[in-house]
Image: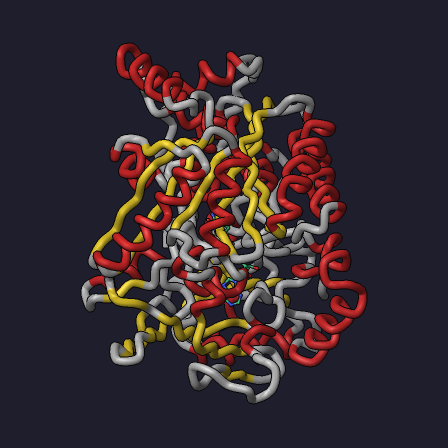
Length: 530
Ligand SMILES: Cc1cc2nc3c(=O)[nH]c(=O)nc-3n(C[C@H](O)[C@H](O)[C@H](O)COP(=O)(O)OP(=O)(O)OC[C@H]3O[C@@H](n4cnc5c(N)ncnc54)[C@H](O)[C@@H]3O)c2cc1C
């Protein structure tokens, strides 16, 4: 296994520089003076040597890796702070002592039994796209468990519409496999190119079409888990009243209670029709009201995303509209009273007649709130570029910008307060950063808010972001929003978990942890446990 420094430091590709359109936008916003900060040569940085000898793992019967880059890759995620550490740290980097590569549930069982005997900490690693410090190491002897050889589809029950997979399979591989058999899972987050199904369910991830397809955890029908104390096989019939749903204990447990080794997922037939379109609303408030109306009517689109004015302006600036086309666009939007308005992307998937009916209803509502449909290229362009943001982040980091995101959800009646408080918190900490915000992941009672922050790097970028993130998270707590809608808790959000679930809620998590993992081996520190 060869892992290049590129894979550890960057999302990939890139190196093309920040697009001129974005450079100009940032300059207009008074942020043109960032000092470029290219990544250090990681190959020249020391990685903590392994302290677990090969003889100690020889009996486990699975492959393993001691290579420094492989160990480093499995010792961190992809948050801004993870990237700061791997791009700009010139001191030795801690890493798991060895990366184990099980092929089956039984291999995982043997690993956990050995960990219990030898007191190894165990860090499960999916795609390493955690943005909340969900993958990290301490001073303890630690084995990373990566699922690169546990990435198969186990079976498909096409009559039921259920597929069973191993945790290491990635979204693109799973979708290709399903598509060949006429099905789709439809969980497509922005990290799709790197993340794994095991990671999605361990963090309760939400994809871009979660409004229609459901968040990852909502599609799980069955889980097989190896925990230090025992194995669990949870999830039977499509509905049950057999006590609390114990699957929920492990969904979102972030490797803290055990390793998810097999996953049953609800899938659906490939859609006959897919439509993604762009609209412009006169304001964020108008767009939010339209989205809320569709949610209340119980006919939301499958994908609904509404950008605020700042995010819309960035998207428009980067769309490449210029010259006569831009003038025509400006005239068109001014005439329809949506100039400087808020961009929405909406998408429907399913049988053609159902898509037509849902779409017709949606447009009746959108028109009531003053929306104007944009040319078909806008929706197509969103589909084409839906995965580009992390590549752009690489280039912005090189150019000397802090780029990070945070997210939440709240009830319809509280969303404005949360939006305002988070913006105030971020501005209080960072001055006048660019904050692009969008509303997405629509529920009958509310929605998610997602914030992207860009500002020139300070001398100590880690402290810079930690201060801003603390202010923003406090704003979430103060406005009764969740501390995370889909990024999960990791170690970053753990200090705020008590505010979310109460002392007794955290105590309950501790009791579960003490039962399934009495030696606190599993991913220590995640969820504030162990
Ligand atoms: C650019 C970017 C875009 C993103 N976009 C989205 C988005 O649109 N929606 C969204 O929800 N999230 C998003 N994320 C966050 C991240 O992709 C998700 O949290 C994802 O679910 C993590 O999957 P992974 O396979 O990379 O898991 P990892 O990062 O490897 O692990 C995440 C956590 O799960 C644990 N874990 C992994 N596999 C297992 C297993 N088999 N058993 C037990 N525990 C396990 C790990 O120990 C860790 O605590 C994004 C992240 C990035 C960097």
